[in-house]
Length: 280
Ligand code: NAP
Image (tube, rainbow, N blue to C red; front, side, top):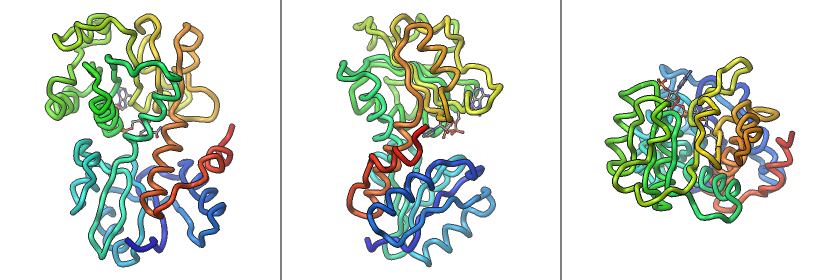
């Protein structure tokens, strides 16, 4: 693959995305004459935009709501993107659309950082059943988790996730059943504290309710909120106050971007420069 002519983020809304800030910081440090720009792309415009980007030899990222649609349009997928059923990183090779999912690697690094050397959790409680939730399931499958208990408002999305990860994903009917979650035959072997992941957008806006009543968190949970905003999210703050370890989505966001940068350009970015550019 030759060096991309330009780098873009496709999605809607993208105006408040941090990706241009940290990608452009890394591009500047690398001395590359390339810019990363957010392109507001409604679903009706996606095919036209991709056709134009193919002509230009561009590459980029994909965010809500296009991760599934771009997955379906890729001619070549990495095994990780194929398993997730979602693409967040794309590029063209001789006009052919390729896709990867670096959310999986980004999530895994965020878990490692949160757990600080402790063993990876066999039990995951997952709030939400969209694209980010699928990336969480791929990562949990890769580390050999025993169960992922999904709490989602849309039964259809939860069932699709369970069908994609049979034997791993179970659907929790209501949050009150969380204490019993992970009670599938596979997970009965462990009583280890779970990793609780918020993969809904709840917490991104000022007056959002919490994605889960904090009183329902199992003792000694590790809480990873995939939402990122300046300052702590209310879920992270509440979980910490209740004595749980908790982190927001910043590490995952930066790492999925760093892995994408390496895909496009063939060498790793300066991760410290990326982090400094968005430091609070
Ligand atoms: P998505 O595909 O649209 O899925 C969102 C999920 O959240 C769906 O299950 C959706 O349910 C549920 N949901 C939406 N609004 C809700 C509400 N008010 N109450 C309860 N559930 C609700 O989005 P995604 O790509 O998975 O992203 C989810 C979140 O993760 C976003 O905030 C995104 O910014 C964040 N994220 C962060 C990173 C990172 O690097 N830190 C990476 C990826 C995603 P329905 O199907 O019923 O709508």
